[in-house]
Length: 139
Image (cartoon, rainbow, N blue to C red; front, side, top):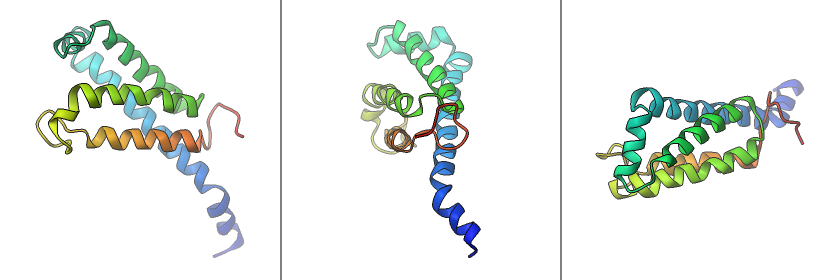
């Protein structure tokens, strides 16, 4: 291995890893918001929230959090804070919808394994920060 590749491995991989994780998390949140808006529709999402005993307005809060939080992650704005702020959205989905369906996401109604993994990914993101190409200052 050359000195240049060793330096890249030692100094750039954590920032590159943070970038890949940040973009993945961000895109997934934007897509989940889009699913609620364009596939389930706003009215359908509100109706679903009400059908499981949650106030309908909370659907709009969740969609806004997913959309704005996803965009913030994609551009690397306040990454640590946004990653932590999105965890309650996933915990809400885990405890209100998916927990009773068992562990595996392939179970009918979707289990909670995917959400648990995503929560861990957000915790790791909060520890790593934005990584490369984020709009926030590094430090």
